Structure formats: C-alpha cells, structure tokens
Length: 252
Ligand SMILES: Nc1ncnc2c1ncn2[C@@H]1O[C@H](COP(=O)(O)OP(=O)(O)OP(=O)(O)O)[C@@H](O)[C@H]1O
Ligand SMILES: [Mg+2]
Image (cartoon, rainbow, N blue to C red; front, side, top):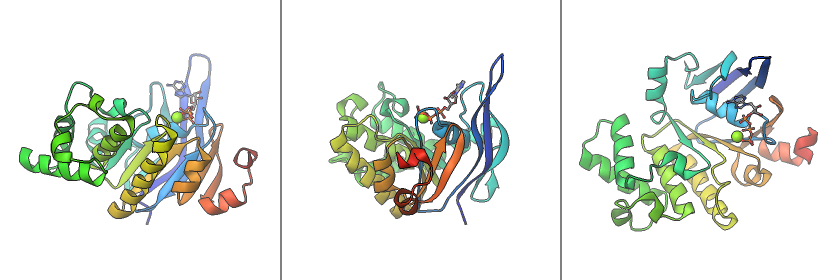
C-alpha cells in the first residue's frame, strides 16, 4: 500500500480579483522505500503540492478539493496543532537552502537534540547519541567533534547532509525534499543524491523529490510526475516516462 496518497488535490490562491489554481486535480502516490520525482518548469505547482502535503501552504493558499492520506490516515483536514506534531515526526522536510532548516545561532547538537526530543521520548544523552549516529549515517566525518559546531563551520554540501539528518531524526515515513541540491555545486549534487537514495532504501522511507532538473529525475527517482501549469501531465515509472515522453515539456 502507498504510504503517501494524494487524491484529486486542487490548491487555489484567491486574490482580490480572481482565484488562481496552482494545482488542479493532482493524483500521486509513493510507496515505502521509493522515490517520486515531481518535475516541471517554474510556477508549475511543484512546491504547492509539497507544501500542501506538509500543511504549510503560503497564505492565502488553500486546498479547494482533494484529500491527502498518510499511511491510510487522512491528514489534509487535521487541526493545525496535530499537523504541527506530525511535521518532523512522520513527515520530514528538506529544502533548497540549508539555512531555512538550520538556525545559524545554534550548534548542530542543539538543533538535532532539540528536534529529536520534541518527537521522541529520549533523554538528552540518548538524543545526543542518536544525533551523532545520524551525522555518521549521512557521511559527516568525526561526528563526535563536529556536532558541537555551528552551521557556518560546515561547507554547503555538509550543511545539506545535516539537514538530511534533521529530516530523518524521528524516523519519518515520508520525506519531502524541495530542490534539495539546487543550491549546491554541481560536483556535490551527485553525492547528496546518492546519499538520499541510499537512506531512502535503508530506512524504507517514501520520498518526494521536487526538482526542475531532469538529470535528478533520471539518477534518483523510481516514478516521476510531470507538472505543467498546475496540471499533472505525465505520471509513471521514470524509465518509461523519460524513455517515451508524451508531453512537449517532458520531451524538451
Ligand atoms: N503565496 C502565494 N500567493 C499567491 N500565489 C502563489 C503563492 N505561492 C504560489 N503561488 C502561485 O502558484 C504558482 C505555483 O507556484 P509553485 O511555488 O508551486 O511553483 P513551482 O513549480 O514550485 O515553481 P519553482 O520551480 O519556481 O519553485 C505560482 O506561479 C504562483 O502563481
Ligand atoms: Mg518550487
């Protein structure tokens, strides 16, 4: 069964004059241990779908129609407090800029331990041990020492590894990654994508990776959804869609 199931999702941004539909009747699902890529040009509605899933649509956006189910449970109609608890616990998030997720004024240890303890019933010592282990899993060398450093003491690629550790710290069922490698040097991008693929398989997480980069789709994803001006115009196994693209955008 799919862990994440998005059914008929229509998101609208009302303005004074009219209503803009940013996603129209979008149906998507992701299984555990699999990666779904969402691709499309700027403004296609990719982030809108991701943000709706984590309950963080920017004002004045709202879900006009559709349902979102997490492991069989409907989550699009949860109250804000329940949704806040679910975010970070059952759905992890990775954004383009690591500094969206990391506080520059706090050590990596503080941030990881705080997030772990927010979601899991662990002591400070246990949470710290878990944090060191996570940093090790995402490929940070000398995690015992580096955990006490601040975000600016890490390179861009290493910072994004910390963000990945943060997204995984409560063992989520789903991770939503919005342009996770766009801000990184090309040479680093491939390493981060490889890491995400490995962790997705090892931890049996369902991942949604939002990107405008067909290379990312080809290297990383099992399935791909192509969005165009709010519509889902192609959806299927990545190999098939990339091998025989139907929509002009995918072909280009
Ligand atoms: N806060 C907002 N207020 C009004 N309209 C918005 C808002 N956020 C998004 N939109 C509208 O929804 C459309 C889709 O936005 P979205 O961010 O989902 O696109 P995207 O596919 O993620 O693009 P990009 O690749 O540039 O990140 C935008 O073009 C914009 O018209
Ligand atoms: Mg976007």
